[in-house]
Amino acid sequence: DIQMTQSPASLSASLGETISIECRASEDIYSNLAWYQQKSGKSPQLLIYAANRLQDGVPSRFSGSGSGTQYSLKISGMQPEDEGDYFCLQGSKFPYTFGAGTKLELK
Amino acid sequence: EVQLVESGGGLVQPGRSLKLSCAASGFTFSNYYMAWVRQAPKKGLEWVATISTSGSRTYYPDSVKGRFTISRDNAKSSLYLQMNSLKSEDTATYYCARHSDYFDYWGQGVMVTVSS
Picture 1 (cartoon, rainbow over the protein chains, first blue to last red):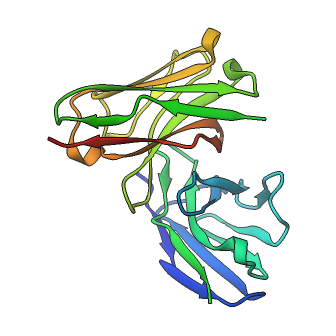
Picture 2: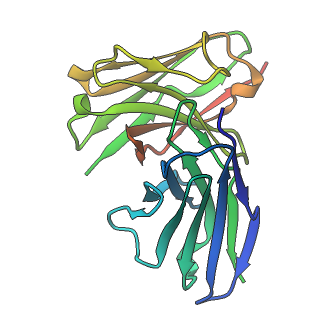
């Protein structure tokens, strides 16, 4: 199985700050990576797919990058509504696997 | 608007069975793979099952293979998850998700608690 190592586990950011979350795959996943945001008590929402494609309706302050085994999600200018948990997902091969998550809070 | 509504969750004893349902609307159900993803309390996400458009192909992780069965009824735009031989570690919120390369739409989730 492909292991997804996500970091950091938690993050506190000030309003307007730019932050990054990383995911490292245990093998090449050929950009088959998605990022999700999950707010408290809600279901996950797709932010980024295919490593760097922005899902419809997602604010442009969210961006994704990476290739091979290393990927990152960047939020350019933290907003209060960005608080929540963030997960990466590899969709390269079954079993699909998620990162352990990053809890993002507003400082 | 895409909508996925799960039902059928609840409290069940270890070793017993439970069947979850997901009613889909707002898209052509028969054109999409569908999946179940679960999340244990205060834990991360785990993919549980995927089914092809016709239902002829199904995929499971080792943690549920042989115990869970995913199925669909395209005429009713419905997805199902039959869970047998349930264990305490199956306790989680179960989400129905549309599977188009990634899980692009999710339901609100249904809680399954396995406990005596």
